[in-house]
Figure 1 (cartoon, one colour):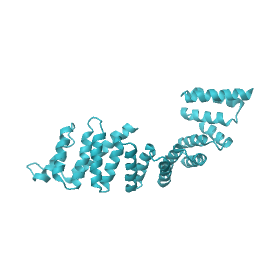
Figure 2 (cartoon, rainbow, N blue to C red):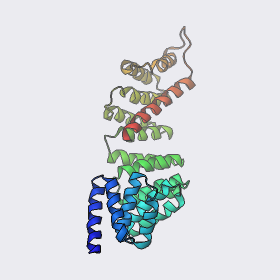
Figure 3 (cartoon, rainbow, N blue to C red):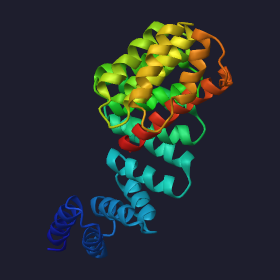
Figure 4 (tube, rainbow, N blue to C red):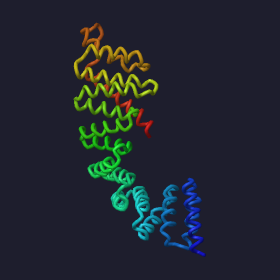
Length: 292
């Protein structure tokens, strides 16, 4: 009978956990563990519920579960999470590597491994894990987005642009993906591609007051190409939709390039470059907040 009661408690605890009742799930798991202290299923569930509740005993439950059932990948993933929360990143990486060995086709474990490896100061290991995910699932938006960021952080701009292009293909209505393509193309001097990406960004970003950001990107591209008349037309367009006056100095600078200096001093090229870069940064921050 104790075994049957333990199984019933395990099922009840699992049901409560899946329903988001983590406190009750933990209570039921611990009740079962009173009679079956070496039940790996109860230990794993107690540990996972404890993690959700930020309970100090969660790590011990999961460590014991991993000892008793070392071939259960979900236990190792949960253990890795608990170790991260304890600041034990190296051990967390090892736990996730074990989970990946046991279930090599699990993209979630590889993504988790990438982020922990990156946080531990091993960006190449992190990139390698994400590349495995994308190799198996080319349209994995989350992995592609992280890969773009990690390539950029590692100074691998060409790889970042390639990943950004794949992300934009997988998620064609995603403004942040298109902004990645535009910015990276601009940084690499691939100005035709940058202009096309900023034009596409202008179409896909339907957030209020965001059109001006895409036009600023087009202006920046045309300035780099020394196409001052086109830049002037774009600056006039930007002024029309710019409710916050972000374009005033940019327009004044371009006017002097087209018509010559006027009575009032115009902003410097450095100031305009900085203003346009800040515009891109603001645009990215707005969409990054929406993704989060």
